[in-house]
Amino acid sequence: MVRAPGDKSMSHRALIFGGMAEGVTEIEGLLEGDDILATGRAMQALGASVERVGEGRWRVEGRGPLRSPEAVIDCGNAGTGVRLLMGAVAGYELTATFDGDSSLRKRPMKRVTGPLADMGARFDWNAAEDRVPLTLHGGGLKGVTFVQSVASAQIKSAILLAGLNAAGETVVVEPEKSRDHTERMLRAFGAEIEVTEEGEGWRIRLPGGQKLKGTHVAVPGDPSSAAFPLAAALITPGSQVTVEAVMLNPLRTGLFQTWIDMGADLTIANRRMAGGEEVGDVTARHSALKGIVVPEDRAASMIDEYPILAVTAAFAEGATVMRGIGEMRVKESDRIALMAAGLSACGVQVEEEPEGFIVTGGPVKGAATVDTAHDHRIAMSHLVLGLAAEQPVSVRDPVMIATSFPGFVEMMNGLGGNIVQGGAA
Ligand SMILES: O=C(O)C1=C[C@@H](OP(=O)(O)O)[C@@H](O)[C@H](O)C1
Ligand SMILES: C=C(OP(=O)(O)O)C(=O)O
Image (cartoon, rainbow, N blue to C red; front, top):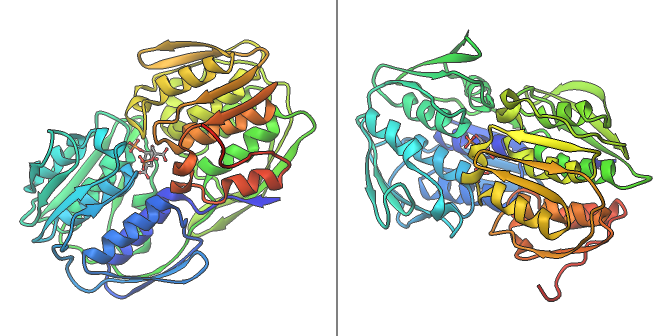
């Protein structure tokens, strides 16, 4: 039995909301990964008090309106960090410059700066349009109605956070549902927020001029991280792994359903509530998987999980068709291209499409050194593949694993894996 690190989405939000709130926020189970530590430093630079008081236990205290930081805010590798922070600060009278690593500098930012500019924030592109580094001038916002064209919780969250300090009402219409951690956690911080079902998605209404109140946040285990040890069990003969206290928010569990559809022996026990979310202990046993066509309307609920799904598909009988996932190309790397290249190098049959890919199972040779382009999920996916491949697999640049899953190598080796760190790449 192992425990996955704290959920990354909830950890960013707990630090940001805590720093915007009046009073003290106590967090337990915080993911102490590099993405989150960068968000903690950012909130501190913006004037909040952010203090580690024990393992995974943090105390955050808002100190009035956020203020202009003295230095550039470095969000590292974190898309969630930079986009939510921009939304959070946009409602305050301040100027802040945001930057990140070479991966973050390639990711689109207009999807968030566009609606924030409609609300009244101003932006200077410091290097290239649509990219960090950029400078944000906040304050004087008015609420807007924004209809999402991509199902993105990062965009939705940035607009809602800006809306807290805007004049009038902010409305976000999502034609397709994306993870709802912001809506749930804002409520826990005392915010008034109304969510109504609309078609396949929902309409979210948030009155402006609201103050958050500090609270207690218990962060459950991250299903996106739990996916790696569970995948290892599914593809390695004789294996069984249980990950305890995994968050089971239905907007995050598309992968588990997909594996079950592929014939996986995956069971969930001890369902209970923790930190406002349902959690459960998830057990995977080595299974004879078969390829399927993954329903496209499931994409938002498993968008970060396609790399590891593709690995398990390589060990399945037949083809697994993954489509409607063009968003994968604008994550920490172009994940469709990187997975296609990595799997092909390991002897797996992959067909790349503009907005998806098809993986056909068969013997997985391994015996390759794979590029990860600063992407934690590409690195972890190929290391898991290596556990069950005929010959070992190496990954370049594995240091990014620490952004979301510190202790990954130790956990996998504790479960019987043989991942060796260091050596020639
Ligand atoms: O809001 C969040 O915490 C996240 C939203 C998703 O991104 P998009 O909003 O770009 O879909 C996801 O890929 C990311 O890892 C975390
Ligand atoms: C896409 C991811 O994160 P982010 O957008 O925060 O960089 C991820 O963790 O897979």
